Amino acid sequence: MNQASKPILYRLKPIDLAGHRFGVSMTIPEPRAQGQILTMPAWIPGSYLIRDFSRHVESIEAWSGRKRIALTKINNHSWRTARCKGPLRIELVVYAWDLSVRGAHLDESHGFFNGTSVFLLAHGFEDRACRLTILPPDDMAGWNVFTSLPCVPGKTDRRGFGTYQAKDYDTLIDHPVEMGHPKRLHFKVCGSEHVMIFTGVTPNLDLDRIAQDVKKICETQIRFFEPQTARAPFLDSADHYLFMTMVTGDGYGGLEHRASTALMAARKDLPTVGQGPAPEGYQTYLGLVSHEYFHTWNVKRIKPAAFVPYDLQRENHSRLLWLFEGFTSYYDDLLLLRSGVITQQDYFKALSKQITSVLSGPGRLKQSVADSSFDAWTRYYKQDENAPNAIVSYYAKGALVALALDLTIRKRSQSRKSLDDVMRHLWNVYGRDFYQGHPKGLDEGGFARAVAQATGVDVQEEVAAWTEGTEDLPLEELFATQGIKMHWKAAKSHPVLDVKLKAGPEGCIIASVIQGGAAHKGGLSAHDVMVAIGGLRIDDKPASVDAVLAHHQAGESLPIHVFRRDELRCFDVTLAAPAAAECHLEPVSAP
Ligand code: ZN
Image 1 (cartoon, rainbow, N blue to C red):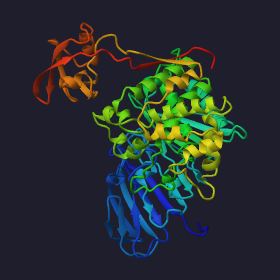
Image 2 (image 1 turned 60 degrees about the horizontal axis):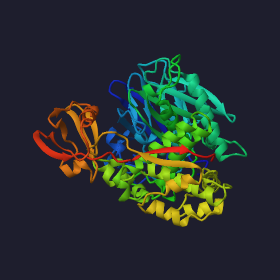
Image 3 (image 1 turned 120 degrees about the vertical axis):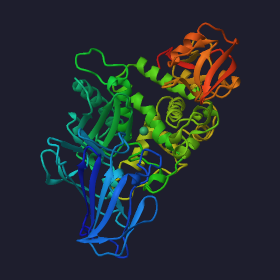
């Protein structure tokens, strides 16, 4: 970047809280004279689905001083201005009513936005520095601003409103912003500041407990990647790391950024002051925190070459999401164990659950994790009722690939090396200097080579078979090398229909029919509403199906009445024995 070149100026203000609208302006000091092209991202990095954020742009105008300039829409995401002289000002109104980690949300209680939802990119100025001025809403006092985006020194007020800076557009859109009056806590890890905020209704939230646990997780991860220096990874992007959690009745999800993460959590999963032990779901929340923080190294810095740089106008395909999401899923729980916030028993339980989820889906025999990665855009992110039969999760099976490789490396190196060495090697080669000089990504076939360099163990064949093939991983024999016994039990004691059920407004609904199972053979279908089994009424709860089946035996044939659309139909279904498909792990000797 030419230091003398003037930055692109962005300005954002919540202009209509009740109507959920942000007013955004953008000034380009030296626009392209023949017409400036402007683009809204079609997707947000970390969430591999075309979302067409431009659809929330309600109005857009271009101005040169007091003169209105014509704008032409040239594709789904882009506009071109007529010829003009600078500076060029673009005024937008953006609708923000998507309560997710991926979009933007605004009402009288708070505002949240990702840059991908509100900021246009000026073509030809991708590397130009940006300044963002955030203004408070007129009719709401007392809000504070939270973001990991660095402020311009002296240009923000004590509430955080004012001017921030980004070295380029990619940086600008990688620091989401929350404003409102969330609960907050902060702590230092290895000398670096960490801030957590909680938006939403959270009576008596046990902030001390959360701070104590998250601090341990962060410290374990920093020392994992940087055992020598204990240097936090975000320090060349921000002066602190920010966890922003939106708390709702049943939320769950997270999205990673270079110095922050946006999370959704269910209220019942968070600890309450004076309520004794934390709720069972708290481990899920800590796992999510651990997952997104691990991404600060793995995917925000160590990246597939296909993401360097991101092309935000179209799908960016990589066959490696099993590494970037799957390995992150392996380490999220493992590092909870290593940081001491869960017990080995808790860890084995979580790992068994993950193994069960992969091994119970017939889709694993049809789709490899490499194919699942490549097709994330059209399949994993667009799941329908047939998903369990057709696809495999690159998160869940990717985590098992990590586990199998970890055990293989430990075995072949006589426990001198592990997958940890591979992650540190990737960090050294691709991650640490990512934001300095010329960033490079891992090429699609480069992983096995990296393992050999890091550990001296050749896993070329295993990586090919486990990521490009569909055979089950040899987990049982690998666990045995570590003194862990893996065995299988049936999840239910009564016969089954081999379906997934859900409670719906019309009754108990078949969510998925497992291919080759009892329901499939008998003719039942996804979306059928259960009416009666063997002449006994089924209510809206899946447990009512279990209650009837508990009186029968495998091999019996029963009439099952369902509504398919508005038609009452009856199928004779032969009940199946429950498969021994629930994994259990048990240490039998000292690992
Ligand atoms: Zn992830």
